Length: 414
Image (tube, rainbow, N blue to C red; front, side, top):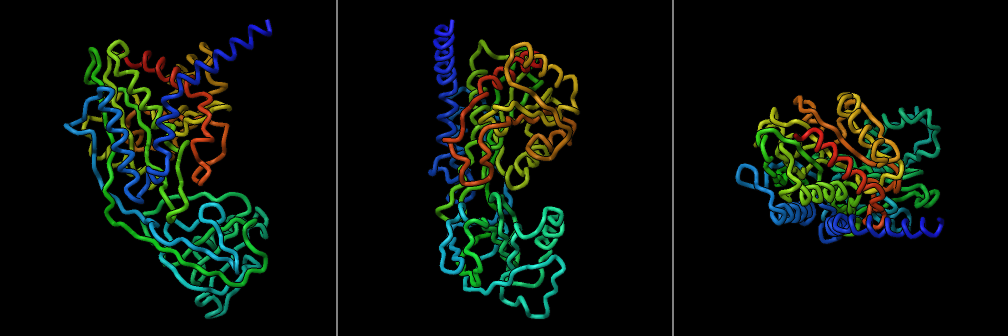
């Protein structure tokens, strides 16, 4: 019996590997250095959009309103040039040892440092003039974290802030530039008693960055004017300077791979449901859900025709199961998900949450469109950092999530 189990287990792994291979290939492409983190350095997001469009066309999806692209613009602060930080005499590694604030301005020079020793520390006039204030989070207890955050949000008059982070560096995107530079540095990378910091950081604010959502449609067999919608954002953070790549394999090349695989499946005539299917790969999610907001403000198809929307993000792992945002808002549909999952013994657990503005489902929900946001849990903790690479993606529950979605669509798409 044990021998039979081993053979069956090996067969399962091979079968699952074959099933997930195309998704893994999509993730490797989208998270490769050539796509520059699908951000705003060397048009990384445009390259990703062209890749998704090519897949949609190859699968036979139709354009929407005559195009696979829905263009729009938004402001974004970028870092295409110098990214150098020297603490004392130690050259720090961008992305590994430090990150700059996404709203950081260009700054160059050598600056003296002043350390924050107490929450209520008073700085006399010109004490911090042309100097950086250093805030070492490890010095202060967790009970003072709110006060520390308040100082960071409204710092005293100084050239900028150095924030020493004891745990993890997490980057993001901004559409503005602040006057003061804020640099977050891992405590472990910071030389003790450093008195001087040397900086050479270049930013470029693009007031109207041209981007695009990518759309593809599969007509239903009978109920063509009613839609099930699959969405995932394909953008990520891009690069911080030339050498710090935020590849975004799990966030969200994995979700993009999921909708591509679903599109490929449903494009086969024998798999088409009665209702039509719309696939949307959103841009600008990391910059503030901009692509999905634009879509809901200028929908090429009536929002009232959407029967249900499934937004897919962080699909790369799933050892601990999956969370459903809006699961508490739509109890009947969530109960259906639970039944499917339990009957077929798919994911370890499906959790539910209420309303949250944490991904592209949000603007649809605000417009009255019934929507779920799926994200898997467990596995790698890499998130918004330089470690979110294809190598950390296991696709542990990718097949099970896809099965769950297909059965859910079968139940709701007739």
